[in-house]
Amino acid sequence: MNCQSSEELQQLVDQAKSYTKKGKVADYIPALQLADADKLSVAVYYPDGTCASAGDIHENFTLQSISKVLVLALVLMDRGEADVFSRVGKEPTGDPFNSIAKLETNKPSKPLNPMINAGALAVTHRIVGGTVHERLERLLAFVRQLADNDDIYYNEEIARSEYETADLNRSLCFFLRQHNVIDEDIEQLIDLYTKQCAIEMNCRDLARIGCVLALDGRDPKTNEQLLPARVARICKTFMVTCGMYNASGAFAIKVGIPAKSGVAGGIMGALPHQFGIGVCGPALDEKGNSIAGMKLLEMMSEKYGLSMF
Image (cartoon, rainbow, N blue to C red; front, side, top):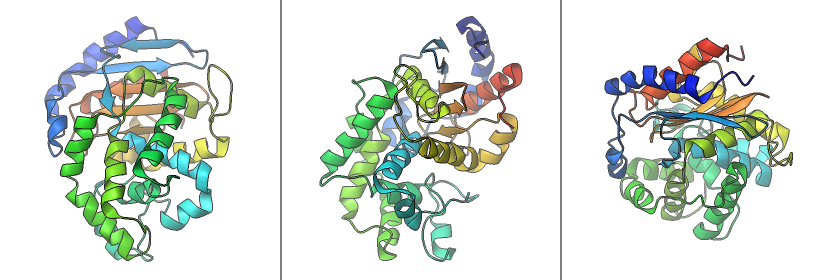
């Protein structure tokens, strides 16, 4: 369904851009405050390798929570479902992404899903490797393969800024270690996790990764199976149920595609068997999602009938 020309997308971006005024950039991570709140861009990557786009699609941004999907895929491939889901559950929380509340009331005390911070930390803990450097390089190699871009790296300034302000995530880690969900040095895990969140790419890269997921793990260029179809389906299911923080239900109704957001303003979408979408708009709503990016996807879904439901 190659109905989206770059010209049509630009018109939608121009309409959605007014919503940036209603949001604000993430301010709890100092380095993210520097983002331009007025920016909005989108890329749509098709299985034949073509890409329609609008806005500043070649500007890099950090993945933040979008990285949770990619780490989940990698660890599922390495460790298997039994290992992963012995440490994290499969249910939405209804709470903010950084909440500790459900850890205290849930029995056993494991995170409810891999898309909240506590669950993501538990999954990052299982990346294979002996050192932070080895584990990060393993993740970067996987992400580069999915994006077909060997230049992808992490933003050192943002990683440092996140590391220095990660006390809430440290608290989650101590709780997880107390309950035997993780068993490594907390600072080592926070070091790895903040670098994972600071992995940088542009909208086209993100749309291509979304396309791999949309194709059940198949590379759109080479046809190679980059990840098992079941792993891709698990990731897309979590994107539907938990991917847009605690706005996931409303997003499923309004837009109706598997998607994952991050607090740098990125949104990765994967419409099964059709295409991948990469969006970036740094101005966020109160739940941590790109306010103009959400509106843009809603307009695209309405115009092109994208909902899978």
